[in-house]
Image (cartoon, rainbow, N blue to C red):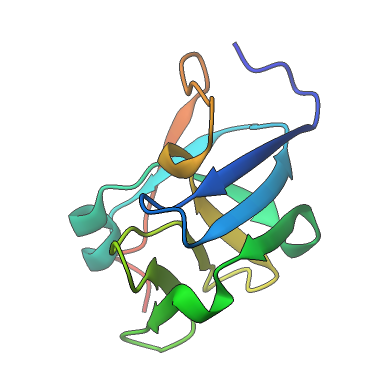
Length: 120
């Protein structure tokens, strides 16, 4: 069950080149049905950019954009892991791949199916 208290988590890609920190209360997790999110199968939490800090690896990130080229999907150039993306509809927020967070257990947190495929 989520505690609804702000917590700080450290996150990283698989090889550790990209490291970051997020602060969130995990109100919900999301899975998106757009073409890229379905293929990467990430479970995400939405955080405001104020609650995100890139600690290391800016030079190890590569960016992928498609369709409207508004959302910015970031991947580690070394290991290929997707740690986060800047959101299309709310560009001052990031979608964080919770599988990259150290010691995080998603059990008990509601998962919402986000509709991305139907966006124009």
